[in-house]
Amino acid sequence: MLILLKGGERKSRAQEEVSAANSGWEGKRGYKRLFTKEVKNEFNFEPIREVAFLFIGIFATMMPALQLIGDYAASPAGAKLINYNTLYWGTGILSGVLDNAPTYMNFLTASISMHGGSVYNSLGVKDFAEGVGMFAGTTTTLELTAISVASVFFGAMTYIGNGPNFMVKAIAEQVGVRMPSFFGYITKFSLIYLLPILFFTWLIFFYFGVANII
Image (cartoon, rainbow, N blue to C red; front, side, top):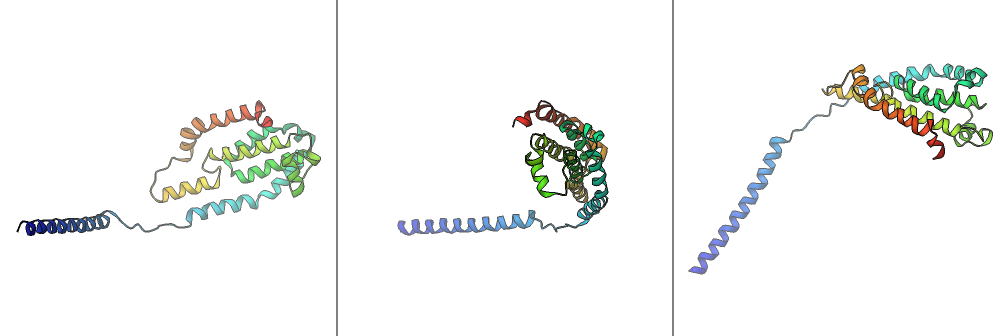
């Protein structure tokens, strides 16, 4: 009799455990149904379309500017103005208010033309980047470094300094995220946090020539 009671007790406990496990599973499923909500993907191409129109306008008017800049940089008056310090700040300032890709291209054209090369000669551009061939013994590698660093880093100074900046802002606003205004972003973030970093980058790596040593 005692054995039967113990067996029944064990069976009852096992049934309770199974029941509790089932109820727990159902509870989890119910929790998921209650608190998990399917959100429809509201992606659209409107932000990308805005940036695409901006790029089309920039690159459509870029070729005459490259020719004018190249001719001026090859002249004695233009050559006096071009060095890695002026290239850093010139590229940086324009990259902050224009897209950094065409700004990079313009200042690269100026630097190559100053040394007698052409941006349309792919092998010449390669020699310019490596500081060999007709560019041996010059500061072309440091000039290219200054242009590259400034065009990328200064592109974050404003929403229009880099194409994706504007696109991310448009996407965020489209889903209801509050974003700072154009000038609010500059005064509250760029000038306070980013500009000092860019200044010390120039001071250490270009003014004191650390980039040339590296």
